Length: 165
Length: 152
Image (tube, chains in turn orange, red):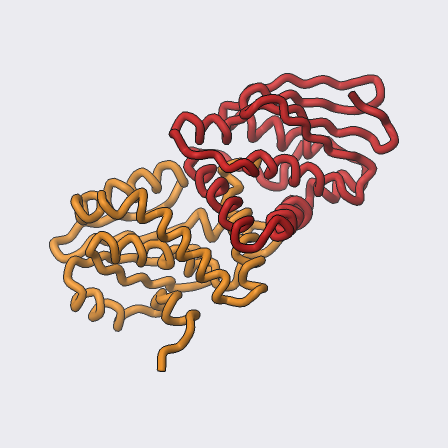
């Protein structure tokens, strides 16, 4: 049995294996995870909005032992990750971390939020330090404005997928 | 015995659901060989410390790893050390299987192969064969057997 505590290191090996075949293979897997997560979460987020997001990540913070701050504002929900246990484990790992490990988070969140009618703006901040910032907006214009402020905006499908034009 | 990874705090057992769906998805898109290769890497690269200990003839970290994480997730098991030097653990309640079962998740036919493949590759290149014998869905026996010793 892979302990649930070690899932991250298994997941990281799946990422590295697929990435070695070509980045589009990794993106296909992330789309699948996104579909899986959307099946579990999108309807709750669509109905419950920011409050549902707050409740979901409160549970994650508890179960995954995250050091994070959650904030509900009129315009957005914010998740400020101070110490991400997922990246911490991927890095505290004799096998080494996938170089775009952090992007998997936005890869599923983007799909869930699209189905929920919400708009995320995700700042990875650093790919080697375990902190990041996610805001979710109802207004797509406000999400786009927020994106201009980000240090490392997470847009995995746009950044690593086939280029348009 | 010091474990290379020794997690504490709360548990997020829903990760077993993603292991289940990932095994199915990788097999359906990339074939059986891809599943095998990923578990080889987990066994020998992620669990390098346990694998290195086994190569040096020391199974104690693997035994402690099995015990620690089954205890942590509410697994049930019995153990036996035999005169031939082998160590056996009969897992009567696998927490990963029962979590999925109780949630009503469709459990992939290959879900239990995570244990079979991990054990096989942990033993590869070492003086031990790490054996996994399924008993029922949700229970199995695993053993650390010095190579050359018959087991039953």
